[in-house]
Each structure stands twice: as structure tokens, then as C-alpha cells.
Image (cartoon, rainbow, N blue to C red):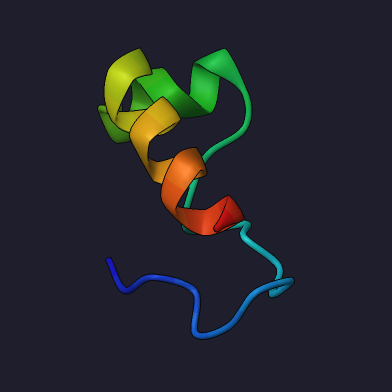
Length: 41
């Protein structure tokens, strides 16, 4: 999974945004929050 190349890039496919997508892709809440923190900076 590569990170978004620049700020403002569409993040679909990188960070799932729905609980079902999180569950399917095996993301935990803490990982998702950490990822969001990285992408927003």
C-alpha cells in the first residue's frame, strides 16, 4: 500500500472510510487514526 503522493490527493484505496471497509481491509481503529494523522499533515 503506497501512501498518497501529495496533499489533497484522493485517498480512496488508501484509507478506507467506512467501518465495513475497515473490517474488510483489516485496519484497526488506531492504525486508521494514525494514518489519518499522517495524511492530514
